[in-house]
Image (cartoon, rainbow, N blue to C red; front, side, top):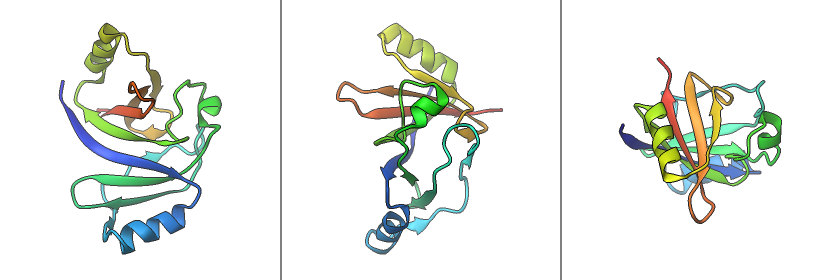
Length: 135
C-alpha cells in the first residue's frame, strides 16, 4: 500500500475571496483537470474552488459544520479542513489503522463520485483523509 499527498483542503466562509487570494497573491493556477465530482445530494452541497501549484491541489471548500450530522459520520472534514492522501489499497490501509488502534469515519462514496474515502484525526486533532479511486 502506497500513500501520496493528493490535496490540502481549507474550509472557509469566503470561497471567492480565498480563490482570488490563492490565485493572485500566491500565483497558483485554477485547477481544471482531475477534479473530484462532488456528490452534492448526499450531505455536502457547498461551493469549492480548486487551485494548484502544478503538483498538489488546494481545495477551497465552503465550511459546513453540519456535514458530519448530515452524513452520519463522526469526523467532519468540512468543519476545519483536512490533508488528503491517495492510496492504491484503501482496505489494506484501513486494516493498518485498525491494527494501530486509530478510529476512522468511512465515508465510502458519500462526498465524491468514484472515490472511497476515510477520515481520521492525528494526535493534535487535525483531520486526515485517505482515499482510493474506485475501479
